[in-house]
Amino acid sequence: MPHILSVSYGAILLSTRQMLLESRGYTVTSAGGYIEALRKCRAAGYDLLIMGHSIPHDDKKAIVDEMRQHCSAPVLALLRANEPELTIANQSVEASRPDLLLAAVESLMQRPPSAD
Image 1 (cartoon, rainbow, N blue to C red):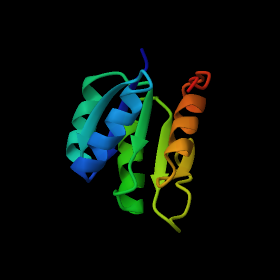
Image 2 (cartoon, one colour):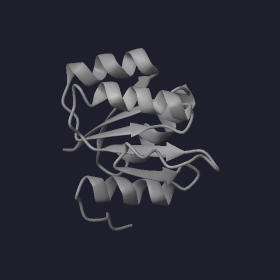
Image 3 (cartoon, rainbow, N blue to C red):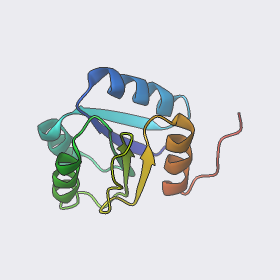
């Protein structure tokens, strides 16, 4: 089963994202912030890293740079309205669109879309 590391600065956002992804059959580990994300990244192998939209753009860059030293999984960046694309991520999508989040996860995991 694919394993996703989801990173956010908001506990409620993490919980909601985890429930959404788990309902689609993914195993999700949530990390609340930079230090926890790095600790969890070093501790286990992941198939995908998700950077939440609550993380400031420059922090996302720093987290991805550090995580890539320990994990080769693709990165999906969730963006706030009018936030520029995170060019060091494999893909960036608008956070307010759960359908785009799920489509991006399925694409990055090279998994066919789930039937609703």
